[in-house]
Length: 327
Image 1: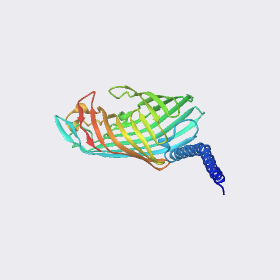
Image 2: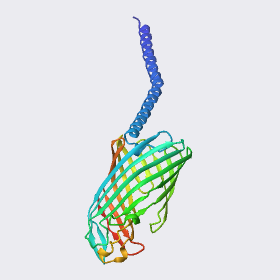
Image 3: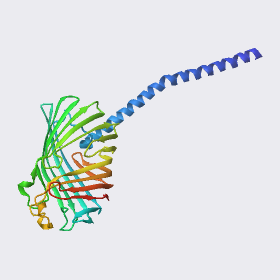
Image 4: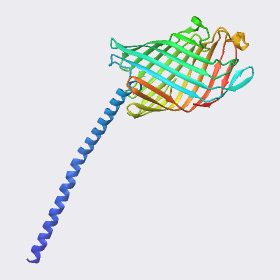
């Protein structure tokens, strides 16, 4: 074969190789966007499926109280114990007390007339304090009450919540009917979009030192796993680790106003404290989790610290302050 023909054959082979590379590159450019789009759609579908499973497994943490479901029931249990922080016990003395806490709620919700969500249920909350008999700190404070509420939506973005909590707020030392109270909460929620809502509200309690308390905050669903709740009484950051398990980091502001028994003061040498009202408040900080054993059974746990606590006999006596303690 002559030299010119050999050169032409080499050039032809080179051109064919170059053409094949260009066609392969062009095919990659055409297929890559399609593959990327399919991947994004698959990821989005996986996120939706995860959110759906989380809502089904943990409805109390994930589901919004909007039109849609006709009704549901939700029992909730919360149990914690704290270490012995120092606290003022009265008569100029300080001491350490342990605390155990139990909260059980059973709630029923039902939509009616599309715009209304009716809520009812009952709650029992117990706080026990390890104190000696003559301390001015009660050895227990309890709530046994009925929850009656209604949500009203006049648009997709506006929600009004009204809830009454009539029941006993007592130390179970003979207060009887005098220990019955009925606080009222009213809150307005503005739904900016599906991921962000802000809320303002007021709490009314004729027993409390400050009868009217206002608050504001927001809820931000960052994505299907992360959520920020910046409002009382439980501001926190939530992470959905599994559809039925939500990890939390935040605070829990607890407390209410209670009436002690008719002989509470006599037993402590301070008759003025008989039938007295006491504002109790504590602030807890730390991590925790919510575990839905079943879709309608939720258990909540929290660790960390009690940042402070206070017993305030605002109308008849002392204000007893406590220091921090581990949970």
